[in-house]
Amino acid sequence: MKNDIKKLSDYIDKLNEEKKPKEHGNASESPELEELFETVRMVRRVKEPALPKADYPKRLSRAVADMMQKKNNAKRPRRPWFMAAAAVAAVLVIAVALNFLVTFGRTNIVSAMEQAYNEIKAYHGILKVVEINDEGIEISQAKMEVWADKDGRYCIEETEGQQKGLITVNNGQKKWQLRPDDKKMYVFSPFPDLYRFTFEIGEEINIVKNALKVETIGEDVISERKAYVLKVTPSGGKPYKIWIDKDTSLPLQRETSMNNAIQYRVTYIDIEYIDSLPLEVITYKLPEGFKEINENAEQIVNNYDEASKITGFIPMEPVNSLEGYEMEYIAVTADAKKVKTYYSLKGQNKRIMFLQGKSAGELEPAPTSIKGKIGNNKAEIQSPLEADNGILSGGVYASTTNINSIRWIEGEFEYAAVGDVSMEKLSSFVKSFTGKDVQIPSETADSSEQPQVEVEVDLHAEENEQKSVDAGSSPWKLDPVYVAQVFVSLKISPEGIQGEYPVKYEDIEVIVNNGEDAVLQIDGNDTPIRKVYLKKLIRKDNTGIWSVVGYDPAN
Amino acid sequence: MTSEEDHTEVSARRLLIENALKELNEEQRKVIELRIIKGYTAAETGRLMKKKEGNIRVLQYRALRKLAEILKANE
Image (cartoon, rainbow over the protein chains, first blue to last red):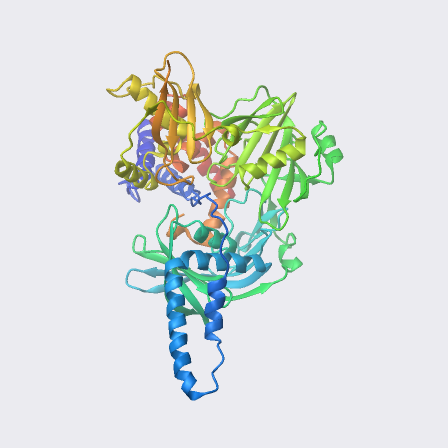
């Protein structure tokens, strides 16, 4: 048993180092241990892609895309002598346009994609997934019928492939998955929806928009549609190719780069843009002979009065009208302890969930959080939400990268707002809901405050550190508290840290964290440093490592 | 997400795992989150959870056994 415990831990370490453990597939291991290895591998698959948060300004139009189309459709000149001149002119215009496209291609294509997405309401298509090996042999893996709209609702049915018949639906109120093989219908919470479906058009455009580099590398014909081919270097991942329909400016196909001699291509072999989703595809109905499996049952209620009868407390109602938000529904958790009110942002695929319940004591903010205030009460601000303490417990938010939260205790009640929206939007929502001032230090604090002592940073070394973190090593470099703890501890013990750190993790307080700059304060008397200044020097999103750029001595 | 995982089957598995994780107690979920999802070492996890490295190894072993049982029951 003791040996198994060590073997399992070593196995996890090997996987974390992105190395193939020698125990992998080793028949000499006990079946029980092999089952635990398999469980570890399954859990690792929960890791979400790291999506950058930086929001690039919308500043360009689809002028070039339109211009290209107009030039292609140009009328034929009447006089033959003019034809040659027009042809030369057209070639010149196209050459200039292509040059323009190559030089400014990224912003124009991206802008055209955004604009085009703004103009559609919903879509319906057939998605094909193909696996390609390093010899170029293609194997069709699956075909899926996709129905999706811009409010985040979707219905995906696998029509060919290993999971044929599998249907996954999220209609905003409920998420469910119908599995015909075992005649079961699994019901899940609709928010947060940690994994939706592959090649969701809005999400693809977001990734391209926030990519480090986008290049136009050619043209092609996909599903009888002319397309631009772009090479995208995403923030936190390998480069991939995406095909953009010339007529609609919307994505048609994506091909990953080769990874372990395998690459994947997903293609909309057919797609139409529609006004709304048919009701029958997003209406929940348990088919005859199927069993509903709902382990996180939330009871939907009509109003707060019904909620109070179930929970035994009177929930807080919004003090002000919540303009720009639409209340979707109110639900009470299975244990009858929490009331959740779900709001959506009108016209956007964004949601905020407002939780309330009885408090179990004082607020103990997560160490990585920023400490703010709601009225006179201290609040825990998390951007992104990492620690699910108090009323947030049980949410499994840890693998997400784009969910923010504000949590506080007021009297005998605990509240939290959780949403896939910016912190600014979330705080304005809380202000409207509660009628109280929301103070978030990172918004008010001066992040440009200069340290008394500057720390010289070796950018080349930091770039290598970033690569190593991207590969799964030293994840603590993403945690500002940990980075500050190691820095201060090494100042106290320059020869190295053995055993406990001389500065405790819980004695470090985040006083500024705007995602790019952070200032942390070290409490207590046994520290030579009072403040540590951190910066994301290599990458600004949630996958970027923190580097120490300065500090203030304790005296 | 790596390219190998880009498939609907993965989405189904993810939902099952996420659901199963919710059935663990807070300490068990935390140790799996830190050790496997976030990739901290046992020593780092110990510091974050205020436990000894050896306790983390035992805790993760028990948590994974429980998780495997839940996943098997839900299959």
